[in-house]
Image (cartoon, rainbow, N blue to C red; front, side, top):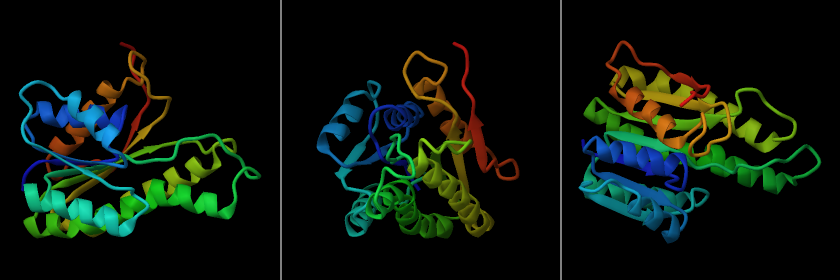
Length: 219
């Protein structure tokens, strides 16, 4: 097993997590919807980072996402850690969205995580080790962020389901719930949040946490 795979490698947490794992000496696989996002994350990595493999994929395109994940695994091997960080973050209420728009948000917030897990976790289980971390949020559902509240609640449920299935095979599955707006220089600084991901990955068996709340820190 080798390296870290970040799906949803965009600005903010995605880039910060990539930097954190690169600084720990891991090769990286990065998947994002656009080449612009991939180039921005790659350019933010610390000097001397190891190998970086990038692929464009829309997480709502099952075949495209599976293909991108498979290509990363073919180049780097089964990942040591997988982070799913894609989300549709917006304010919307009951009357704002059509069913099709809700389904699209769900496909990004949850569906892509299901596809990523289905593509990676069985191979990680065969290796008897590995970590998958999902970026969550909205610990308190809000009617003014309906689609995100629904998606993040489902993502936490998915975390529990995957943990039950794959922890016995040696794979740690966890979610980090961010309880505030992410912005550099604030108590929800993405680089500080990214430290939680590395800590989760380094937890020894028997001390694994599944659901971690990041409530902010004063810097």
